Figure 1 (tube, rainbow, N blue to C red):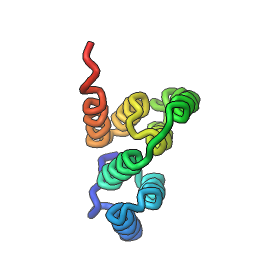
Figure 2 (cartoon, rainbow, N blue to C red):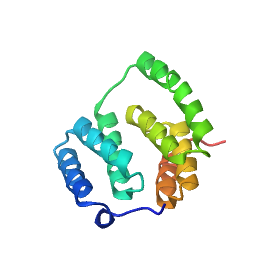
Figure 3 (spheres, rainbow, N blue to C red):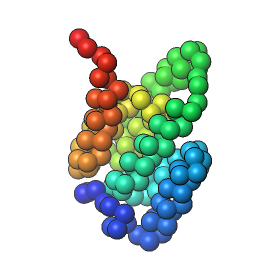
Length: 146
C-alpha cells in the first residue's frame, strides 16, 4: 500500500486531520495525539498524519518532566508489546505499526519502537514512514558513539 497525502484520503479524514492540526497548534497535545491515532487506525498509509503525530508526541514529551522510576518502569512495561510487535511484523505489518505507535505515544524516543515501526513500514510498503522513523532514530542516537 503506497503512502497517501492529505489530498488522497477521504474528506472525513481530512476534516479530522485539520481538527488535530488545530489542536496541535493550540498545544493541546493529548487531544491531537488521540485524533491522529484515530485517523491512523483507519488510514495507516496517511503519511502527513503520522508526521504530525510524531511532532505532537515529541512536543508533549518535551513539556512533561518524568522521574527516574517512572521512566524505568514505563520502559520495562513495553517489553510485551515490543515482543508482540516483532512477532506480527511479517504476518500483519499494519498491526505492528499500531503496536509501535502505542509505545511511541508514551515514549516518543524509544529506539526499539522506532525500529519496529521502520520494519513494519517496510513490510507494509510504506518507505517514507520507514525513513521518518529511521531519521528520528538516527537523531536520537547521534550521541551514541561506539
